[in-house]
Image (cartoon, rainbow, N blue to C red; front, side, top):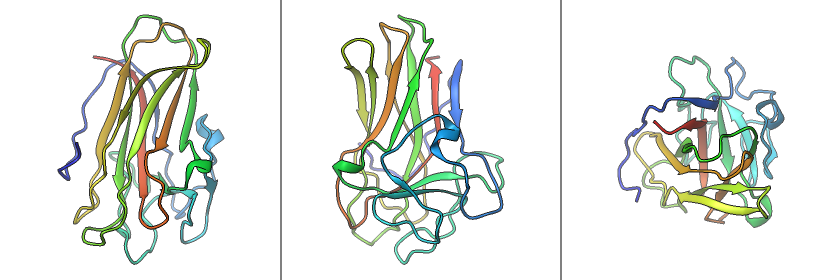
Length: 202
């Protein structure tokens, strides 16, 4: 359950990939999901505000009356670091994140994780985001082998990142990693994602 507003990051060894989204001086990066080897059903936005079912790679939370305006990404020592900001859409806008991985070792334990936060300020009483991390073996009849949910992401007085992950032991060398929303609402349900990682369990 999600009931505290703290950073509970842990350290893992044997990193397969880490997506930090880079950095820059412009509010929005001009890079696209393909630059980071993933796809999303959301529409990319590089305007001042992020609309329903849209996302942007921003280096701070954009101006919005109910958001943590100006809050920064999670990556350490990353001036102007970008993060994945999304106004989560409905079922037709899923998944948020889809990354295909090859050349894994069968029988080895891996962890798929990301730092995720609610960008809505405390006290606004909007719908809280809730994200599910999934691992699918695509070459084994499209089998779901692991999943875990964040639970409702809390509204905090200051934007607070937490790490969420799911561990799995593949029986094949190829998997697809997904992040999908458990919640579909037009008011609230606004998130930031950063430091998406696949690593060997320590």
